[in-house]
Length: 419
Image (cartoon, rainbow, N blue to C red; front, side, top):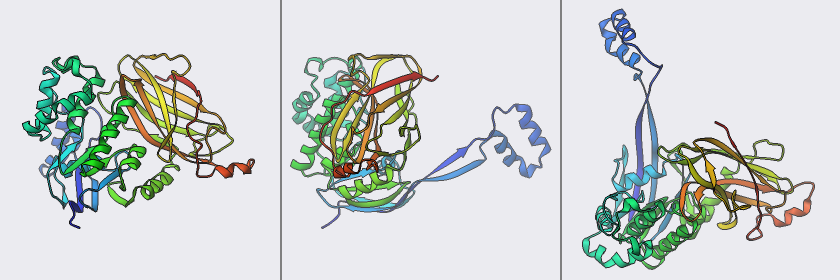
């Protein structure tokens, strides 16, 4: 069968400048120039300015894969692996440094929800503006208009400028417009990690409709392994800019999680402009030692560090998964159903997990900093750990590789302001 997407020896290189030293005075610059021969003038001036050291960084290297028409392929990997860079090259946003990409058919991308919205325009006007930016014809927008409005649930506010919308309404409208595109190839990057829990379910259902009923070729980047399992038959694993595995989704996710369980600390690069965001997640055993392999009959803890840039009311929550199923949703507001007041600063929350809560097997979880049902400020997904058999409790081995369905537990959250 003829391939609809074909990538051969693809590479993307960036040049990184390393600035050395701190504040440099004019006197220092002149002194260096006077003392150095003319043939070193340019070099020395660049050294004093701190721009002499450069490094080539390959965000992608030797990437090869091919996708057939109608296939839905997932793309997974750790933060910084090169997933988003790959999609930006495929959409033509940035050119490759080497290699080639061949794509056949009409292409649409959903890389950042809400790109092209104008705050002074109404919801109605932004539907047509954003649709045009995404490549929809006016005929297609008129045809899909009622469906877009109904999906976004903004009928009452359709003629209100979007600057007055809540963040949840804004996200719903943006996704609704983008999800009604009708291309041959759809490139999707983490759009299901927006909005509240119910809206994410709705988005996932829309994606399933697109894949099953309309037969589009989709390349879907996500940290949500449950969504990848649900939508994709094949998955690509990218590590450090290279394709490490391209196989059935179950095989690739199994390999990925087996690697992730050995990493007990997960660091996340801060994103400028966010009011709150998780920066570090650590998994510790009952003695407080870092470990991602934990005995079934011993308690453990999750240490979650996060930053708040503006005063806000919100809560921190964790959502546990196994084999693509949700097992437990826990929030620091479970005991009193109240949002917490967070002043600007850095915080650390320790969540105590009791013994025997999970069966023997592999699990992963996500952290959310949010106002439930209103706004999702930050989400970090696919933090993994493994529950192992205990030599003191050999009977626990009967649960190996299985989980027991949804759990019910109120976990202990302890939060302190560190700076």
